[in-house]
Length: 524
Image 1 (tube, helix red, strand yellow):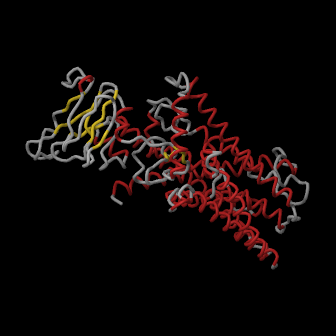
Image 2 (cartoon, rainbow, N blue to C red; image 1 turned 180 degrees about the horizontal axis):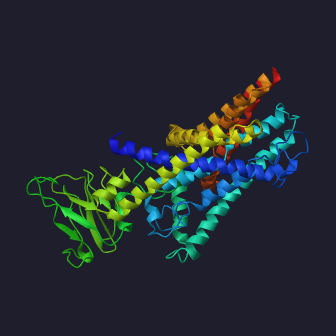
């Protein structure tokens, strides 16, 4: 990893740390608001810990936060996720909004805030403890257990789908320059291509039949993190298709044999720009021969010669696609950077002389870093100062917020293993699955330890609560989980991976709970 990528990773982690703390804090107080009314405190009585039968045990405490986080995840979806013809990293923002060019912020909002606001581990833990008993619970609540799994999954899926529909409404009616109508033909064609690719077994990272929603359609940061949280099945256009679908302005740099881009006699400065007044290239006569015998096409088709050099023509434009060899033409699409610095957004903006974008990225990162420092100082101070015995619960909440970034960052790192399994399991988002299972295991061990030991000291109780609510709550996620299921549901009935993934995840976590937590409780 070069220094630029290291700096970029630090920036992403800073965004994750800030937004994950806000997500954990929101989850804690949202859970309290919907449950504290049952004990006479401020709030309403809609969810419950399920201490006994017929006590709303199926409506687990994190139900509301899972629904809200899933809704926001859908609302912040990229245009590729919504099958919009425009390329926007956030569909609810205008295409020319400066915030479209800040991928770290998108990661912070989706992976950091939404991922930490929702929690898979606490959901399973609450239902498993009601099924087995212990920790003040009656046990044997098998009906509440099954019903809790069903409504937890369906309400989160519905919230995510509702968020996507709200994003479509915002894009059409509220965003300047939004879509007048949906490109239904393109959506249907894309879905057909996706199903066909799935049948062939081509829908994996090698051919990249996936587009990362954590990074939207922005490719600049994909070299740093290969996978993000939310994945949508979208057939990525090839380089030739990018030229075909790109803007009318195509910069073509010609080099003669023996010349290098920066060497003596280079003609790198000789640019022919289609559609520009000073360009010598006419849009209707844009045709060049390939370097080694590749032919040109006059019917809009794209073909490639044996050495990988080809030409493309579309809409009156034709240009050669080469590998940079001598005598070839390098086609540069505006907005797409060279691989050398495409992975580092701030460096790309600086080298391409985009001062406004560079300053925006810099200011955004500085503001997020300053806010993170303030939030860390605040919660560290509250954890230390708020030390009255009657405030132990609040102290545990402050510490849980501080533990959130560790779980969120680990989940982000694990997400790079999504869709990386070999063979027929390549469709599985293994990173998300692993993060959820690890969080469940830690939750069960912590809960079983509390049951086995019995009375714990004040600090032990605070730390264990912080681990469960902060670290495990942020390590596991429901918003990403339902986003992946929602995407795979588009392939039904041809492909049933959505059911395999959803039911398999829920039952695996429950089986781990019965084995780990149950064995610790039953042996007490």
